[in-house]
Image (tube, rainbow, N blue to C red):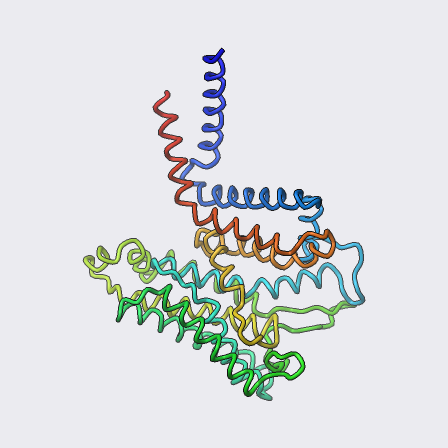
Length: 385
């Protein structure tokens, strides 16, 4: 009897091993299969939590889509529709794409840019006070906002790279410290010179400088049109080209694998570190201006945007591939954006969405371990033959 049970257990183990190696073991498809596996695990965990608190997980996930304009609601307010909800979602999505690209570029060279939120704030605040409060027309103010965002973000990112290169200060430490410095300096300046006494945020910017066209009449609808989404898609193409088709991209990848080997091969490691962080910071700056002068029109003092931290999960989930980042951005942003409507429609706490995002981040960070375990299973399977 014991032998029979042992054989059944071994048979079930072999079946499980076969399923795992067949779905996750192909090196050509692992880049897609493992993130999908991660997403499924996160959604299952979220469903279990929802069921535990007495809510219907399927209805809650549908409400999540409704909150993003990816599924129709039962009714809409005047001048609103599923399309207006979706355009608002695109406006919220745009900074996430830029922020995730910033993380991905840094990871390419083996750097961890955890200061994206601080770089976003630096770019958003600088563009706000220089252009956002000016009377410049849209044809001048919008390009200036983009340019200032690029420069301000690049300067902060470049400083982190320089500290790493010149003094060997870990980029994680310097990024976190700069986050605090920028957060409190900007808060002091806002509360001293630019605060709105009613909202207690920075004063609203001139609509001509905003990168989202708010309440724009389109037929019988009034929708928010995010101009930055076009720039974000262009950035995806350019970053992919940089990574895959240029000498710079090759050098970044080589430095990410081994700084000492790259130095031996004649690659200027310090130059690549600074250059990589300049590019990463510039992308963070674009995330900042599309966030603070796009989706929002003001800055809340003493608060860093969650987008910069969620971008880590997005970049990892997308395997730091610019095209993959588009899809992972859609997923993570829809979970975040739709959580408010899910909470009101299904009674599920919005914090559940944060749990799902956290599980995605956790399993995405374990991608290398998943590959290792799958490889071990394949080896065990081969030994049995």
